[in-house]
Length: 112
Length: 113
Image 1 (cartoon, rainbow over the protein chains, first blue to last red):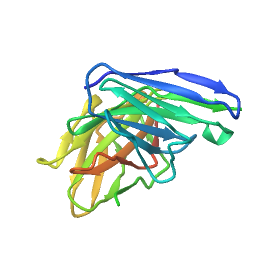
Image 2 (cartoon, rainbow over the protein chains, first blue to last red):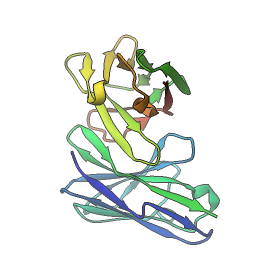
Image 3 (cartoon, rainbow over the protein chains, first blue to last red):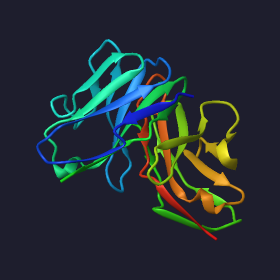
């Protein structure tokens, strides 16, 4: 299995600002994923980030709002831009390893 | 499109009793099925998976799940629930060649001492 860490673990932000979330993996992985878990909801895939290529966004998510970087095989960032209270969620990084996906501890974001 | 249904919002069970969390799925193709558990203020932890082979799969913490192709179900079970099993449980599905996981809405399990 992969060990995944995320920074920050939580943050409280003002509307209109941006927050960048970091995801670090202890091994090299090809595929990384970013999910959003809104309060009391299930997980929704935001985008898939492969090293060396542009991220692939799911329906309802756009690069201008959620820009993603994937500079190498162990690291990725997700930025939540121009935040509004509706962006208050847990954001989770995930990596594919074999048949499975493993998840980071999440970043709990509150937008005031 | 692939989808997962977890019909119950909350499952209440007395400690020591059997625990079942239901999951049905819809995919085009052969499913890869997963169960994850989320404890308060923590990320998702992998419990078990079905890819191929024996329909009964065993996972972490004494959990098991049975793949039923005819009923398109993958119910999670534990013979004797513990209070520490109280958590949020997610069923997920994907198909071969597609790494996008579709999650169910989750079931809150409450084990009553």
